[in-house]
Structures are given as C-alpha cells and as structure tokens.
Amino acid sequence: MQEGDEDVVCLRAKERSNTESREARAELRGAHREFMPGGTGYYEAKAHFEECVEQQEAGKSEFRKAMQVNKWKGNRREIGEDFFETPRSAILPIRKYIPDGVKTILEPTHGKGAISDLLQEWGYTVIKQDKYPKTDDTTQADFLTDDIPDCDMIVFNPPFSLKSEFLARACESGKPFLFICPLTVMETRTRFQLSQKHKLSVLNLPNRTNFMSGVKKVWFHSVWIMKHPKYRNKILFADVPDLPETVAQLKVKLKELGLPVTGKKADLIARLEKALE
Image (cartoon, rainbow, N blue to C red):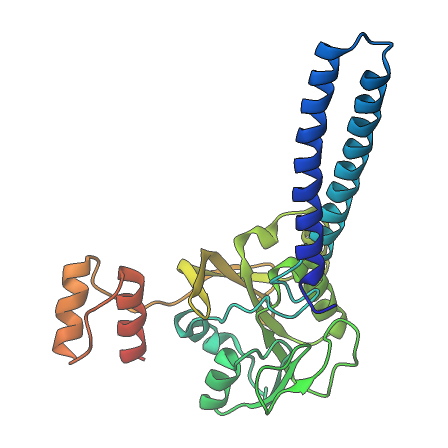
C-alpha cells in the first residue's frame, strides 16, 4: 500500500457504510409499516440495520486512526515539512547582538539557508545542520538528541511546535544563542522558568514577521530570544531604519532607487530595508 492509500480506503469505507446505513434505515421503516414488531420481517430488517451501524462505526474508527497518523502533516515532528523561512528583514537586527569573539556559529535548523547565508555574509563560519536537510551542504542532525558540535554560538529558527524543547536544549548547551519565535514564547510556566533561570533577554521586532514556505505565508509578531553575556533579563528593541509610513511614500522612495514598486506594504518595506542595508 502506497503512502496516502490508507486515507482513501477508510474514506471509501465510511462512504459505503453511510450508504448501507441509509438503506437499512429505509428497510426498517418499511418493516414497521408492513409487519408488527414481533414479525419476522421486522427483526430481519432490524438485524440488517444494526449490522450496517456496526460497519459504519468501524469505518469511522478507521478514518479517525488515519487522521491521527496524519495529525502532524506539515510538521517537522513527523515528516519535516514545518519549514517557514525567516525573512532577511527579521534577521538583520541581530547583527549587533552577536557577542564579540564569536567566530563559529551553529545553525541547527538550516532549512534553505536564510539565516546561515546572512551570517556568512557577515564573516562568520556557519555549521549547517538540520534534521531534514534541504540543501546539499547541510549535515543531517537532530538538535534535540544529537551532540552539539564545537561552536561559539547558536542561531536558529526552530519548528514553532517544538519551541519549548529547542529553548531547553539551547539553554542546556551553555552557549550564547539567538532564536526567533512567535511572541507566545513568553507564555507557559515552563518557558517562564527557563527564561528566569538562564537570565534570557528578548529582542522585540518592529513588525509582524512574514515567514515563507513556497507560496505559503505565516504572519505573526515575532521576537528573538537571546542568551548573551552582556544582556541579561532585558527587553530590547530592534534598530530599524527610518522608512516612509504610507504605501505611496514607499513607492516614491523605491522608484528613486530604481526598484520595483509592486506588492503589498510588507513587501515594499522588506525591499526598501534590503536596499538600505
């Protein structure tokens, strides 16, 4: 049986059982009309109806099991598709928060290299790892279970469904780190205690972050959680360029720079920020 066949089988079983159940209900109604409750035809129809109901429940059970198997479809936890690339505009603010003396940085969720590429542009050596490699230069490794290689710092964008586990593992490493995640990382007692114990800081970004996965987009306000020898228990605010506020003003500025003016406001801002680096 090929991948996905079990879904087709259980859906067909469910449809078949639903049809048989409807037919059995019709037979039972007919038996009520034609026979007294003690008559043979009534009990035959009732037995057939009960059998169809059992088949229907069995089909529903198979369907629920198939749905449970695919519960994490689109999530690294099962098949490695929880991939939403970090936009350049969200990475740029961390440059000043990389401690002095750092030369080698581990990126354990390399993906297609959005973070790693920028770190390399800044002159750092990057160890590129991912549990589900997507590029030829990525080493297959599970950050949560494998040994952490020798490095000076860790910078990454974890699967958001596993942010607690990745946060705990980064804290265990004892190394400086930066990782981007939704603002909800501040919730739950477990993450609160980790932040308090390890004196973590928060770098607040100015806008909602547009994470990309092919044509899919996920928008939400994001922050960088930071373990830094200089910044402890701090709430910091990212430096951002002084940009025009309206779409019309953004387009005028982009035209002055000879850049395209198509797209939504967030696209225009990202394009302008990149040009002004």
